[in-house]
Length: 126
Image (cartoon, rainbow, N blue to C red; front, side):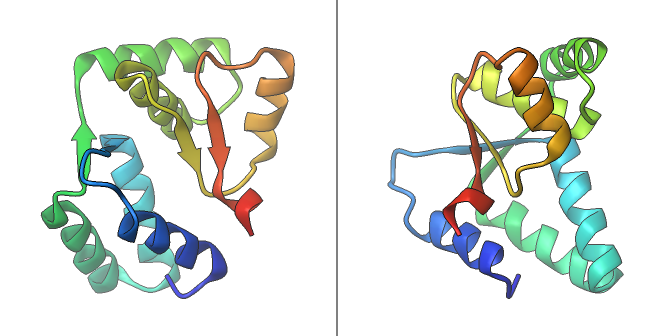
């Protein structure tokens, strides 16, 4: 939101083709919410999450399958449960997983054993 990385995300959503879908886990919604809340405030976070959810651009995955797959990944890998849920969601839909930044723990895990899906770091596009 107002950063170089935020502009990349906004441009991505603005250029989506009609047949393209964006999926995220329910945990990713929590993560976006708390980051916005800490940075800007509760009312702003509530407003932005509402805009995102009402837009219909993003399909939120809150299934048991995602939760169990995320738990399995967390058991096997030294990464956050939120990141595991994003990876699990991408695996379910056969898509790539997109992270804002190249976080050390994810890169370390990829170096040890690549994930079964493509991983994109938006910060690499800056």
